[in-house]
Image (cartoon, rainbow, N blue to C red; front, side, top):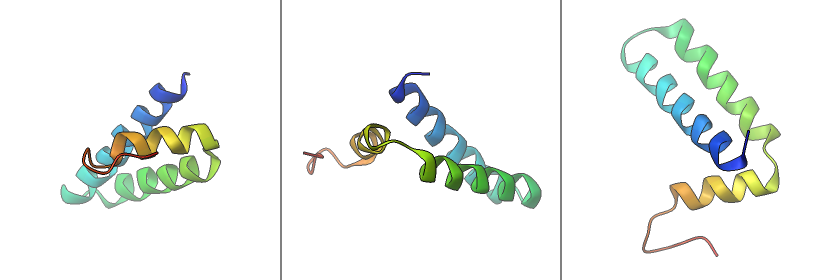
Length: 63
């Protein structure tokens, strides 16, 4: 999986976890949040930079 696709997948799963929490599905929310944390821990430097680029505000871009 390309690093950009991996980062987009990570963001999608993080949003799913948030949605599950809002919907009251505690088990799914906990599982997805845990998986999200593990993905963050295992990300390479390149993937972390890509995540920063995708989530930083336009007026303050990542250098």
